[in-house]
Image (cartoon, rainbow, N blue to C red; front, side, top):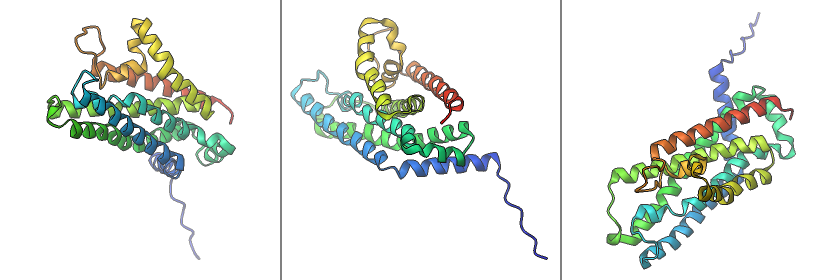
Length: 257
C-alpha cells in the first residue's frame, strides 16, 4: 500500500518568506520600477551637472562636493515617491489585488512583505543615486573642492540613502491609503514641493515635519542651535514613517477590495 506523504507544514516563517519572495517578484517584474528608478538617477545626474557647472563658476557659494553634489536630491526624490506609489497602486489597476489577497489572505503579512520588498529594491537605487552625484561633482571640482573627511562623506551619504528609503516607504503607505496612482502622487509631490516649503517659511514647527526633518539627516542647518540635528531628523522621519505605515495598515485591513 502506497503511503501518501503529508504536505509540508506551512510555518509562519515559511509563509513570510514566500510572501516576501512573491512581492519581490512582482516588483522587479514591473517595468515601471526600473523606468522610474532609472529616471530618478538620470534626472539626478543631469541636475548635478547643472549645479556643478554653477559651482565651477562660483555661483553656488560653496565648493563642497557634498553640498553641490547632493543639491539635486531634493528634486530627484520625486522619482522615489513615484516608485513607492506605483508599487502600492499598480495592483489596483484591473483588480489584481484580489488575486494577491486570495493567495495571501493575511493582509498585515502581505503589506509588510510589500514594504520590505520595496526597501530591498530602493536601498541600492538610493545609494547609487546619492553617491553618483557626489562622485561626479568631486571629479569636476577636482582640487578646488573643499576638503571633507571620509567619515563625513560616509555619514552624509548614509543619511541621504536612509531619507530616500524612508520617503519611499511613506509613499507606499500613502498609495495604499489613496489606492489611486495619480491622486497619491499629486498629494505627495504637492506636499514636498508646495505645502512643505510654504510651511517652512511661515511656521517654526515645520522643522518637525517629515520633509524638513528628513533633509536634516544629510543637509543640516549650520550655526543654528534650534535646528534639527541629523540624529534627531532620522528619529523624527522614522517616527513619521512608522505612524503612516500603521495608519495605512489599519485602513488596509478594514477596507473591502
